[in-house]
Image 1: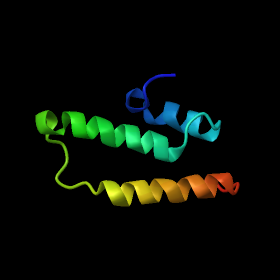
Image 2 (image 1 turned 60 degrees about the vertical axis):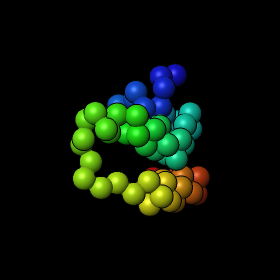
Image 3 (image 1 turned 180 degrees about the horizontal axis):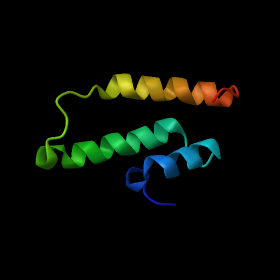
Length: 68
């Protein structure tokens, strides 16, 4: 499997729906990549990692309950 933050959205979606990774794992990878590159790229005016992770966890719960 590719590193989490190297996946494109479609690949991540397929892996999430197949149960190979969780939404939270993918989001943690994205946040890790942002923290590594943001000082160089400067793409974000604001990002709230705590909020993003809470939303990812909610999505994981919904997926486990059979809701897509």
